[in-house]
Length: 381
Image (cartoon, rainbow, N blue to C red; front, side, top):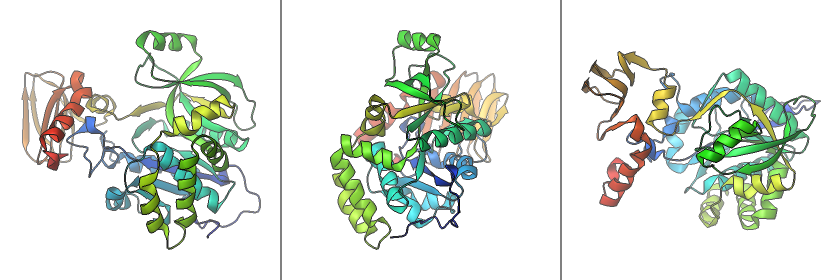
C-alpha cells in the first residue's frame, strides 16, 4: 500500500501545514434549486452566482493554496464524469465515489480512513462543495489556525460570527481560549446546539457567545477515527474495510459490497458532538462572508450577475426583456423571457422544465420536486 499517494517529495522537517489534506464532500441534489439542479447535475456543478466559476471549482481553488494537490473529493458515482471535467487535477485514487448517498458520517469517515492508512499523522479538513465564501484570504487564515489547533490534538470547527438571528443554522457555543501557537483565535467548544427558535436565536446573537456552525471540520484523522470507533463501531469497521482495499486492485469490489451496508448518520452526531462532550473539539471564530446556496433567494442575494434594470440575469446568452419588474432570471436556453409589471419574481428556464415563483416562496420549490416524483414525472428530476 502506498504510504503517500499524493506523490509530494519528502520534507526533512514536516510542519503542521505539510500534514494538511483537503477533503471536499460534493453531495446533495439541491431540490430547492430545481429545475437547474437535478440528480444528474446537482448544484455544485453549476455557476450559481455568475462568478464565472462553478461552486465545486471555486471550493477547490480556495483550498489549493493551502493543500496543493493533496485533495480528496467525495461524490456520487453518477457525477464522476462531470466532476473530472471540472477538476482534472484530482487523481483517480483521490476520487471517492459513493454508490448511494450515506450522509456525511460515511463520506467524511471514509476519507479519514483512507488518509490514515496512507499517512497516520495526516490532518484533514472537510469543506463542502456548495458554499460561497469571501474574502478568500480570511477563510484561508482561519483554516491555517484550524490546522495548528488540530495539530494540538483537537477536532476543529470553523464558526462564523452571526450577522443576524438565523433559525436556519446550527450554532456553536464557544468556551475558554486555548492559547495555541499559530492559532490565537482558538477556543474550546462548550457545546453544539441545533437550529433554534427565533426567540432563542435572538438570545444567542445578543450573548456574543455563539457562532454559526458552517460544517467545516479540520482534525487529525486518527482522532476522527478514534471517536468514530467509540460511537459508531459498525460504521468504523465498514469504512476501514473499504479503506484497506482502497489503494489495491480490490477497491471497487470491496466498496460496492460494503458501502450499501453502512449506517446513515451525520458526522456531527457520529463524531463532533460526542467529541465535544469529551473536550476534544475547538472552534476558530471567523468573520468572513459565508453562505450555502440553498435556494433561488440565496442566488439573488449572492449573485454577481448582470442586471437588466432591476432583474438579475444568470445564463450565457440569456435573452431577457423587462419593464417595471424585479427579481432574478436563470436561463439555460435561448428562449426570450419577457417580464412586464411583475415584482420579486424568480424564473428558471431550462430546455425541458420552467419554474416561475417568487423569492418569498423560494424555500417551497422542493414541493414541486416532491409532487413531480409522486406523479412519476422523474425524467425532469
